[in-house]
Length: 425
Image 1 (tube, one colour):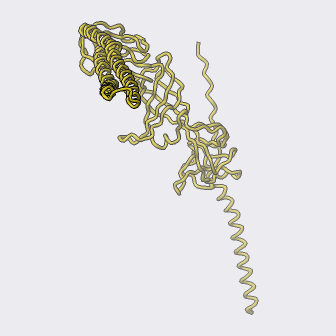
Image 2: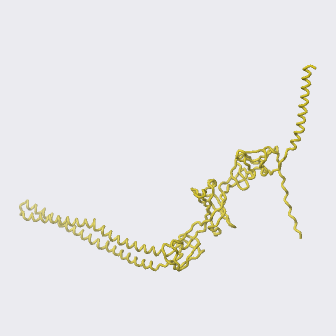
């Protein structure tokens, strides 16, 4: 047998073997494919719907305004005009303390004040003008005398020059003129001194006496007013620990008043949640059998040093006093609203091997495909998908955990609702 024929026989044999292998693979490969497992899962379609980012936490209720009234003087209570639960308005008298000694002091200081007023009026209206008038009159008299002596001297000097008057008469006129000038200077000095020194000092003394008497009178009146306990705010009396005749402990509140027309829920939340909130955001305060709509009124600019949380206030109207200060409530604050968000069930989210977030998307081939996504708002049931998924795509809501990529899946059948059983008569 030649080498050429040997090669042909070998090639033919190899071809037959390859053809057989291909046929075997096709036959048994289809059977193996037919035997691949199909995983039953719950599938849903990503859909458009509005979503709200809600921050929920517990909070303590406080009144909108509160006043713990502590007396400024120590004295027994003469009479109370209110009890616990009484509604009061600003400026209303709530109680009166014993004040007989204070009233007597006011009467005494009032008399002293009125006397000081009379003295001031007499000093400024009578004595002072009289002294000033006398000094002014003396100055005018001295001036007139000086002018007269000056004219007399000038006349005698002229006559002396003409030889009609002896030297002796001229000298007498000169002496009288010098005396008149000296008298005028003295009167002028006295007048200026009365204006510069006498008037301010007299007024200062009279004013000081009047102010001193006035201060004592006002101080006594203030102490008397402290014996009347008045409400600084409008609200409800929540505490009145003493009875008439008792002397309140020093520094202890005699009456406590709360304005409960509005309440403030004070909560502490993590920094990342506080960063999403803004003053004015809508909120809801929920207590047992009571719910009230409110808004965020304060976001603390600093962290609580003990818990490193942020204090947030939510204020709500409380017209019927159904929300009681001091109680623990649930607060839900709406931080953000998306009117048209692409959403999937929260159970559809999985952690990717890189530490990110993924979902399993079911394609038209019936296979589950891994898809990395980015999320936005999250609620207890739904999650907003901001990137990586389109509305209408099918994702696995339940059963995707641990599912390999490109696994055959099919929708689980929903069990029909059980029909109600008719009651036997």
